[in-house]
Length: 144
Image (cartoon, rainbow, N blue to C red):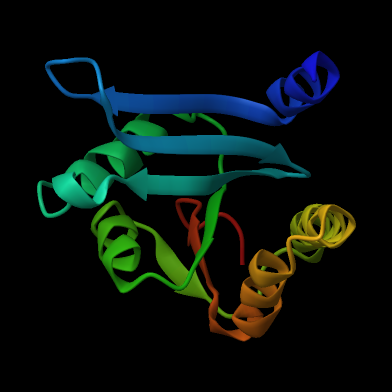
């Protein structure tokens, strides 16, 4: 519905799509605003285009386009961790509680939506792997 699209657009700060010569999407990334930070929430690369450095290019583009610091990311992907480490992110065990509460609230809302829609496989995947996600931060050393 149009309302949901507008609501998503309000939360999404910036989205980037990399396309091939035919205009087909190869990779996508999304930035979202949170209390006191910007989160790199989505980095997706088409399986046929993996290994070409597209995730590195997307992460670098996010870093360059985001003047606001800190920039945070939660992932359990080793490939994405390599890309963000190369861009200057550092792994943090504990980070700003206010921002984490905003991220946590949004995750809880997403899980609630999955439950309401009956998407139990997706919900189980989110819950089962929550402990595997690691926090990465790019903040130029300003935030502990």
